[in-house]
Length: 366
Ligand code: IPM
Ligand code: MG
Image 1 (cartoon, helix red, strand yellow):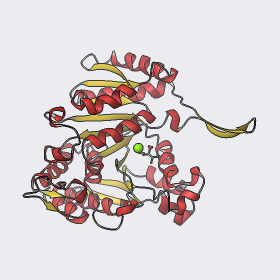
Image 2 (cartoon, helix red, strand yellow; image 1 turned 90 degrees about the horizontal axis):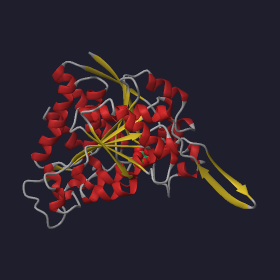
Image 3 (cartoon, protein in one colour; image 1 turned 60 degrees about the vertical axis):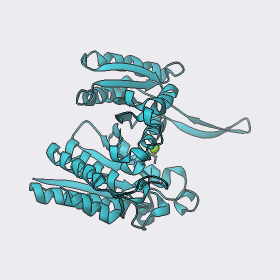
Image 4 (cartoon, protein in one colour; image 1 turned 90 degrees about the vertical axis):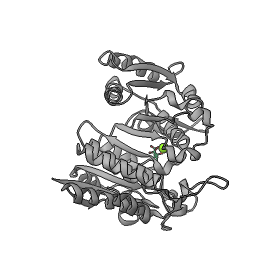
């Protein structure tokens, strides 16, 4: 079968890591008799340079015409890049927020898994790590503070800025359903994270999540305040299976969860709407400091392509094959610099490789 894949390579290390994910997809195609046809789409800083804005209507239309979109990363160095002299709504990040909204990608899945081979990269103590951990953050992506009304005004001679955190019950219900559905395929535990001791939007969140939970008697639900969750993630990450939370809390907690796995270069993500369509991207940023050096870790992007196979194309076996190939390269000792053992750690049997060699090694193992 033929699958139409939009490719937003983006800025910084984006083009390098996306090239490796395409390499792996092509290998899957060859092995399993699928055709992945790619359409390049501009977004972020490169779109500002080419078209004067981070996301054009043509780019949105092109993305909509695909079965799924694979993305690298967008943005540059905020201190030095001219993109950050532009007003906020013209900067690269506005392209990302714009495409999320335009394609209604309200469900953001961010798995955080500790590979046994990368245990040494985990900053937590051995007794906390135990047998490792495997959680998934289900982040609401098109509501809350990110998309509520905002303004900066001068009141009585003083500048005042306002952001608004808004959620409707429908927005909460649809993300809660996604959270419970995915928990059913995992360990059947949902931790819903909010700030219900302070915020009205969180009190509504809790009420609606409890209503949805009634349809999932096989899934265990608990509620946790976001500040406590930040603490529990480093105190006892094993307790979590699915963390269900609103946009801003999910943004913060997912970075924290990625850090406890040791490298953000390993973490994939999927942003989905009500259909099979999804946007798949690594959790990490554009890392302008190492762009073009051929040393970036392509694994997060390759694992994002695996999520695309699973969620948008229903190719579970192919997705399993990509994930196993990643595990195998780690077993075989391949490491990009971000996951290479630190000074003083055992590096026997470990070889440092660049972006391309890592992509080749994974493709070969499919
Ligand atoms: C993320 C990023 C984005 C976000 C930025 C780049 C706008 O941090 O995907 O987590 O805040 O959602
Ligand atoms: Mg973030």
